[in-house]
Image 1: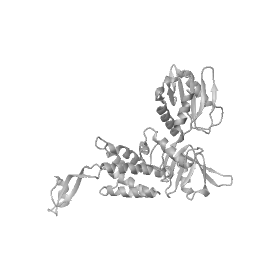
Image 2: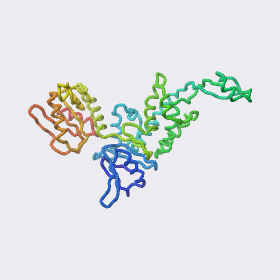
Image 3: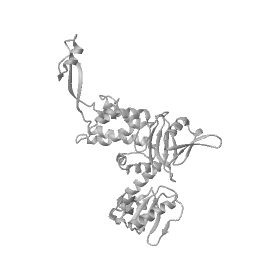
Image 4: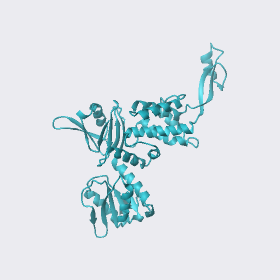
Length: 381
């Protein structure tokens, strides 16, 4: 396990399987490969956080570029992931996870295993599966042509098709394949033991040998709605896919998230929670830069009080002129009097800017004490 933060470098001498990591970098856009003056190579992280699992078993964990212990940063990343739309992360908050000790990948695994355990406790759903078999007794429907072909010399047998009530359904096959994969990728003893224990509940189920086909046959209805979240996570583990993950020729598994998107989603969720009385709108496009024709839509991250207050999140450590031009457009088109740029705490520079009829304030968000932070922000409104 190698743990770094955004934009930090991993040098060839620091990583036993640097060649495997280099191949992953060459085939992806999430890290960059560079060279020192003495000719030594290095890999540099970009603006993504998460984990990369190499075929060798080595893991590269990338955390946010914040001045805090890595244990705190892991918990923060988990909380941020929970606020992303269309990502099955809600279960994290309801699961007892030791985010201070576990690496991110092991946290993802633990959350999945706890979801499967809950599914097992509620009772796995059986269903009728169409079977074909050559039996010594007649059962179901006799398949005449196939029976003649197979049993011309065995009149005592019947080739039949019949329905069998079984646990061997596509959802369970996919879950079993995921549990088997976890056994080979986890480095945490409790995760290994829990995955091994859960496999016993799927003993009568075959593992999936055709993920695409089985996922296409997954059926979520009134009786199987408990499977929905588990299936979303199963797809992530088996397909190695989520928002920005990657699986190329190197066969590396990467669960990576753009930090700007995490910061934006997390702050928006907190504002919705603490400013519910301000008629909060998130990512609402209500105005355009030009009216005739309506072009260049303006979509502030957060709109409060029908546009009188605009908040925009910026995961950056230096505010640019372009950012201020953007705030000027928001002020003029929304007729906003107060605009806040919400950014991480390490930002440098002037924190308050006045114009003739509006003001822009740079507000540093304390991600580790959001209640105090949001109360301080409210005092400025």
